[in-house]
Image 1: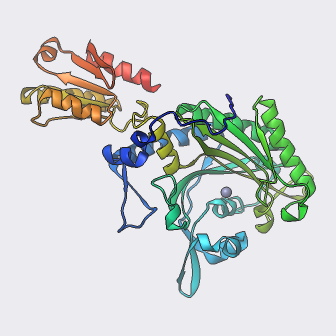
Image 2: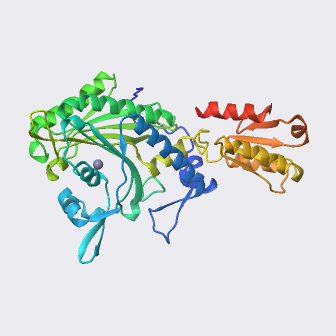
Image 3: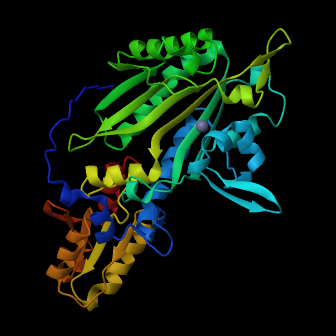
Length: 415
Ligand SMILES: [Zn+2]
């Protein structure tokens, strides 16, 4: 992992051109509407397709890495949040309502649900580790003054997972998590990271849940894993939350800005509150170890970071429209349509511009929409049974057969 500690590196680009709110509107990706409510995101078709691509990739990678996918409700009885402690300590951030004389909570977190799935049957040491992953949409009240585009919202989806394991399994789990986080972030084009280890303040042990032994084991496991991987990190003593130490992996974007994405967080609180155990080899019940982790963070925020990092020119595997087919005149619309169908059948996201505009106007439009490839169809191309290819921001690439073009895109996407 390439780690560089940056101290307020100067923003090298004019950020106004890369503002995700502006690009989001220009490319018709999402909107936020006062009638719906501030901080609540409407994902338009083009934004939704990018979201789906991220999610499909995320789910496939999780299945390959030994996670099980779960789905949990958006609301739950107040009782659940009473046990978890949220109703006592987090109430001002939650949306609470009443039905049949009973409080209900719109979930601010997914953890209690994953815990209940774990607890749905007795667990043996042989079943561990158990890793539950979910794109879980949560709602948290934030003051209106703090909201900002997709970066700070009231409803968002976490790429959440919880790992339940034994003390002997911690080291390996943390090592796997570091590799997994790096793999995921690199796929999206982030190669520079700042890593932080938040530990407890040894002078104030009363501030924290869990025994001194638990903390030592967990902090050692986190620090060892980082050293093992040769990752330079900064220890933030006293920065841990009351329930456990954590590692944060912040990405550095094209403008040198730092964003917290991945987090790996121990929890000595919830397993106690929910009485979570497993049966050990000696037949006795032991308390489980629980790790919360997100790799991308909130999807809304991650999407904004991606859009700003690439100034809207998403890599081809993420681009909502990969190819725009531009017939030179109405005579070539059916030829364009046939090419579109061939591309579509191969899973390539293409569109035909069948408007009456001139070809130069169509090219300009496709450039403004930041579509990676343009295909031009006219008499010359139809006669040769080929297509003319243009690359966004590059220009003309010459003639290819449809088959060659499909192969080129597939290679570029890494399919
Ligand atoms: Zn959690």
